[in-house]
Image 1 (spheres, rainbow, N blue to C red):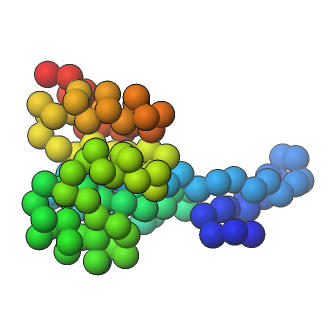
Image 2 (image 1 turned 135 degrees about the horizontal axis):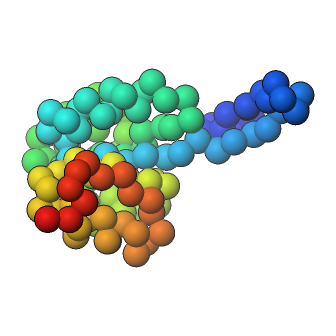
Length: 117
């Protein structure tokens, strides 16, 4: 089994199935972003693979603590090919811009409310 894969044992079908873990990036590393990072650690089907915040110090600290690449520009994270989905945890007025940019690149989005303001 390669890194980033899970083996799911199905009781119903009595078979094993290899499922790729969802590679998640968190954009916005304030209080709620940090809470979401903790929650991701509890999801076996997900893996934190990148973080981003406009505050370089916060990005560096979180990147080092989580052992993942950090970006001070969300566009760089989206271009990195490190994520399958992003969790947008920025001020609400930036959700549409970041979400649209991610979706144009085929990256799934999870957004705190509101998605648009």
